[in-house]
Each structure stands twice: as C-alpha cells, then as structure tokens.
Amino acid sequence: MEHEAVPPATRGVPVAGHALSLEDLADLASGRARPVVDRVVLARLEALHEAMGAARERGAVYGATTGVGANKDVEVEEEQAEHPRAHGLRLLRSHAASLGPVEDEATTRAALLIRLNQLLAGAHAQLGAGISPPVLGALADAVESDALPTMHRFGGIGTSDLASLAELGLTLVGERPWARGGVAPVALGAADALPLISSHALTLATASLALARLRQLLAAGVGISALSFLALRGNPEAWASPVHAARAHPGQRGVAATLSALVADGPEPVRLQDPFALRTAPQVLAPAFTAAQALEDVLLLEASTPGENPLVSPHGVFHHGQFHAASLATALDTLRATTFGVLTLSAARLALLLRPEHTGLRAFLAAGPRGSSGLMIGEYVVQDVLAELRPATAPSTSGTVSISLGLEEHASFATQGARALRQTAELAPVVLAIEALAAVRALRAAPDRLSPGASALFAVFDEFLEHDSRDMPIGPDVEAVVARVADLALLVRVPRD
Image (tube, rainbow, N blue to C red; front, side, top):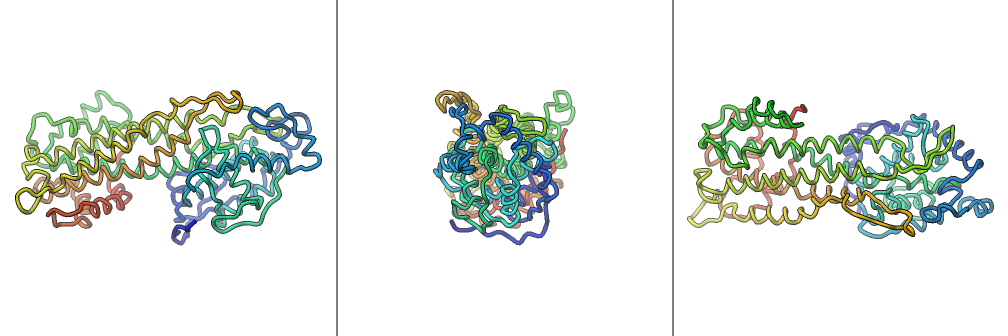
C-alpha cells in the first residue's frame, strides 16, 4: 500500500483515556499533530489485568475461559493449560476475515488512537478490558511511533469491529506485516484476544473523520446560502428574530441570526415572499447542526469510555450488551438524513440562480455569445450526486440479522451508517460548491447586491475562482471550492442556542 504524505507534526496531543475532541482526532489522523500516550495511566491498567486473572480463577469468563458467540458455553481452559496463547490466536485468526477494501492511513491511525484511548479509560473507571501490560504497551508504542496495520473493511455490523481489530491483534503478535513502520512482536496473554477486538474503534474513526468534514461543510453552507440569497435579492423578513424566537426549534435561532447578519444592508428585496429555497434555510440547516452535535456527543462518549464485553473490575466481572451501538447508529442515521435535506435545498437555490426571471441576469448565468450554456451542466452534476447519495439516507437501523446459530439476533449496523456518512462527506461538498460557483458568478454580474457582512466570504471565492465565465469545464472551479471548505468554514460562525 502506498503511504500517504503526512506533514511534519509538532503539536503533541495527550492520549490518556479522556475525551479527544473531533479537531484533535482529525489532526492526529492526518499527522498534523502527534500523540503523547500517558504512561502513568497505562501502568494503572495492570490492576485490571490482575483482576481478570482472578476472575478466570473463580469461574467462567466469556472469551477467556470459553469460546465466543454460539461457543459461549464451550470451555477452553484445558487447552489453555497446555498452550496459553492457542485459544486467543485461534480467535484472532478466525475473526480476521481480511476482506474488502483496505482502510486508508488516516482512518486506520484514528482507529488505533481510539482503541488505545478506550482501554486507557478503564484506568479512570477502574473497569475495563483487563488486557495484559505487554499488549497494551505494544499498542501504545504503535500509536506513538505511527506504526499502522493493514485493516480491511468488511466484517462489522455495529456489534464491535471484530474482523478489522483482529487484524490489528495479529499484527501486534507478529503474524501480519505492518503496513507502515512497526513495533516488536508481543506475546499474547491468555485473556487478551477478545478484549482487544471488542470495540467499535474503526466505526468510530470512520464516523469521527466524516463528521469533522461535514461540520466544516455545514458552516460553509450557511455562508453559501447567504451569497445565493443576496444574488437572488431575497426578503430577509423570513429570518427575523421574532419569527424564530416564537417557535425556537434547536439550532434554528442561531442559523437565522447568522444568515441575517450576513445579508444585512443587502439589496432591496424584489418579492413579498420568496421561494422555499430561500425562506426555509434556517428550518432545514438547523436540524443538521443539531444532529451533528448529537453525533459528536455520542462519539466522544464511545471513544473515551470502557465498553468491552466482558468488563472486569477489582470487584468482579460483568457480562453485558455495551457492544451494541444503537445510540451511535441512530445519531448517524439522523445526520445523514438532515444533511441530505441541506443538499436538496442547495439544489433548489441553484435552480433559482440559473433562471433569469429570478436573477434578472442571463439564463444559466452564461457569458459570451447567445446560446451559451453557462452553468447548465451544474444542475446535472448536482442531481447525479444527489442520486448517488439518496440510498445513503436509508436508516441503517432498519436492518435485521440472525447469526451465530441464531444466538445473536440483533445488530445496530452502525458500521454501515458510518461508511454511508463518509460517502456523504466525500460527495456533499460538490453540491454546495456548484451553488457557490453560481452565486459568485451572479454577484460578479451584479456587484451592487453584495452586503457588507458577506463581502469577506465573497472575496475568498473571488480570489480563487476563474473570472472568465465563458463556456468551459466547471470541474476545476468546483474542485477549488471543495478544497477550500475548511477555510471557508472559518468565516462563518453559527452560535449554539
């Protein structure tokens, strides 16, 4: 696998079992920051390893003294007496499906960080996996030295990323080559295999990186909405604070206030009442911002708390259902659905921008000879992208399952929801970028419509977008906007209610 370019990292981010912000995780995953593992916290986990050993001495512990899944009642202690590592190695080998696309380095790096952080969280709760110090140390060394395993995509259904994390386990013990860097092979303890793979670390990494991107996109989208509003000479009455204070859905007042500030002192409105694409921007954008915050809350909790099955404490061992990611799956479903609404509203504004009866400008914002097509193809591209994304709005939680001889009869499918969110984060910027291109062309043709509040945002677009509006491929301009989404987001601040 060809390595991705990673910029030099100077800023250290502590990894100690506490919540990692989305921004820190994104910086760590991309190599813009370096992880610093808290070895004091790591050492405190030895007490949980001893507690796991004591629990095994007292009786059956799922996955440690027994098989897993439908083999939950099959004792393996006799084999472990002769070959302490045999059961764990078989578990890792059998669960490492090694099928599907290979995860990219940023996602893999984030997954290792999250898995280590979850394990470290056990030291604070005095409740955790009970993994042996050598395996914990090897994982910490891998995280700090940027050693990455090969992790394939298939094998998770929202009840732990068993297949992908089993590949991590086999790499740590030396049975698989490292894809990048490496640490010395470590001996697997008798109760290390299941606790190592009992986690949604890869799903959480996928969702977290997608969310970091989408949050930037939503902020940029508010600014792009304002530019389109100005180009179309909208009526700001619909965004007035009394309107949104009277029915204050979460996030809506903040979006409406931000939009109002951006378009203040803009052109005189040309309509008593605007089309839905302009009037309902706060109502459509606010649920997406609210859903993004709800997903962030779930991700921060999942990535900084112990959830392995079983969990061990100095007082005993607990078999439970914390591996079920229903809360995560539900939050993912909600954000994908609300983001799709934002995109379809963007498509509606684009349609208005291309119609001369709404802009007072040429059809398709064309320049050059009569009959020029201008941005006509932009609508085709947007509808193609929306059609590609429409299946991703289907709720992953509607899935059903009965596996492992019928004993595991429910799953959240959060893993599939996270992958769908990643697809949304990859394609959604194209939709908003085409709207931005149309809005900027319209405002260039009618610069008197620009408001003071939106001038800085317009200036950014004006700097890097092609000024020649005669017929030519729009791809380079759209790609330029997509590449600058993070910069554009910094210019738009949406306050939380």
